[in-house]
Length: 304
Length: 250
Image (cartoon, rainbow over all chains, first blue to last red; front, side):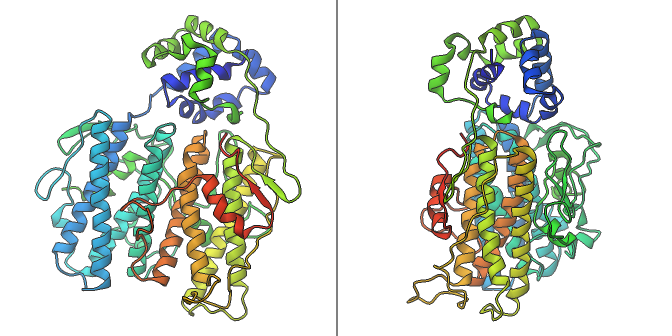
């Protein structure tokens, strides 16, 4: 009797089944040795309890995750539209770079829009005058300040995709979403370079110390616990926010917690070499939960 | 444990239990709440071989199976990157421009952190399954050149850095779907975006504004993704040992 065969069978009915279990590794870890687990696995009571636990708080549907990503891409695309239209960007390399990034965001919007439809959902929409768009009253007057919003939007986008990837395990959407994720990181690096900042997250980042922008780099905080977003002409679900487990700040120095195994302290815990806090923080980007990203202190506050 | 928590291919499902292989999502939720149904599921679970990590022999590196193999794959690439940047950082006379030297020193430390972290995580979670230290082979890189000239046969430092970073991004993007555990997928996601930042920075040094430019068959707005086999074909040129990645993710 091997109850992992059951899991294999279930994977066909529910592609997310593996994620449900792996994200609840503590269930397995708490059971002791392999022999004990095998013995327990013969018990119907055990299986029933295990599956109930795995399916408690069932994850978002792919259309929910895609609409969430589409929300952020529509926001970015509209921001870059306004950024270019404001006419403050120096001609040449700067305008070329912002134009390239805008084009990428438009491609992402188009891809996600079609993906929502293909998955059987209703895509959120936005335009220059309605739906999901960057609040025009927030666009600063100067090029330098406009670039700050670009950096915040890109760095937040990187955190946002990271925060949802695990929910796409076992789906064909995981790879293309990650291909978008790392392009956003390239955008962020370039805009940071345009601003004279390091291309990667650094403890010395100017915006991380700026009250107007630093929420993009802090640990996750969300003031709302709502799980249904009514945006852009439709509604979609997001995971309920757990205030007891906010996402780490970008200055986080501990990585790799797995089940009952604690995180590793990067500065002194991974070998004979001691690393600085700045390098330890820069070497890993941090995720954000959907509720944290859509909070009014972050991207949610930039929506019109 | 997580090594066995994986979907089999459709063929083996068909050979297994045709009745339960057709289980529908709706009926599964019934099982989730009904212990009587769980009995039927328990009876359906018949024998299936556990996966055994491959062992490596001298000169031949095998990555094993399951999540350990995907982590080993990442660890191999990070070993290469870290060794490359360490060599650049140790140059007494660098062909890099003065402003580039401190950023390359930073990237050397980021990659060393990735390498050391992955080694720590693999030893913690998959004790005994880690690949050995790789011996880098950088004879195709001219460390006296910042960028190769059109007539040069060897890569300059920036050319090699771009190649390693773009390859790393494509490798993480392509391997993500091989992870069974959300924990390791999350870690890979935290690393890959830093590699993408490195890649964008290095690309801009070679050609300003090329941070996310399409090359070859790249799709506009989407970063590259490559299979382990394709990545290791490229990486093999920079490693003395023979890399055998045929079981990665299995």
